[in-house]
Length: 418
Image 1 (cartoon, one colour):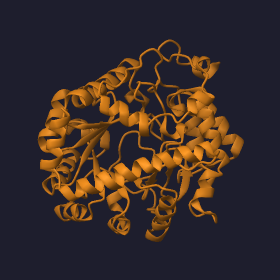
Image 2 (cartoon, rainbow, N blue to C red):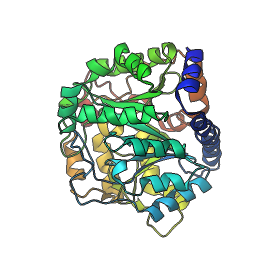
Image 3 (cartoon, helix red, strand yellow):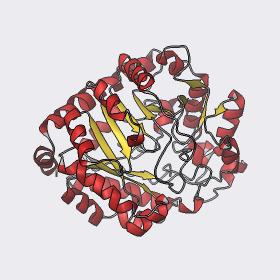
């Protein structure tokens, strides 16, 4: 399997892009994680990876979207974005996830990517704005991988994304990337309406045949003004997702990313462990994209290292989350998150200004943390990579108390009522 994966990378992707990936994301990314570990030992903090939503606008209206996509357009301007990246690079960072809205609606996105050839960017996109010309520019830059979101078959895609002909337009953008030998991934927010179509060997085999190099299965989180909680997965389905990811990693020549488990199969939350935090389109520094509360901003008159590293709100979030669950706190314990927001007087970082009411109305759901159902990695390569670069960095060892959590399969309401 590893040989087949290597052969695919060498044959189907521009070799210069592979070098950029290996150096900017691989070598320098590992160095960023090691610097993060050293900071933690000194009692300091700065996440080794940052996710930035560069714009709120989007051409789609997805179910469960938490971004104010229909509001007046707001974006992080080129100068501000360059400053954030430059200051993060000074801390050792080299990888940045770019989100939206739809990032390719940002008129200066390619200028941002071009200004930092020593960094690596993963752009989360619906693919609709990736023309052949854009794909050729991505290949020329070499330091970016588009992660194209596919949410189901033709009918399900239109339903999930609130527009017509979404699937065909997404696939057109994906094909433009692959035709130009850009290293490209496909992601899916797994929910009740698409899990049976996309969590399958047949779908993964099709991605491989097309030339897609990696895939990423997110888990649907019922948040935002129209949360659609009926789309959330149940514990049995969550276990099915984990088992499929583990099996696919060990048997198929495609990279499969997940952000929720270490090499032993133990659940984790990247925001709780301090692996990453999020910057919104208005510059607010949030724990993660779905938790839209903040005390600090990139426009604060302090260096970014101090703005993030000295944030009491972010610190208390990490400790609160790590001491109560290895899963997603907004899904399992929205009541605790509400208390944290009120304690710090954190501002609602949305335009709609209803995020706290939405949080209060959130009903508990099971997340990736299901004790007793840990599924360890079968692949030695993934076990090794996670041991070195993706684990809990001691967060749960320090804070977590197993008795604080109740299995949502048995009594989900007890998580709130106790």
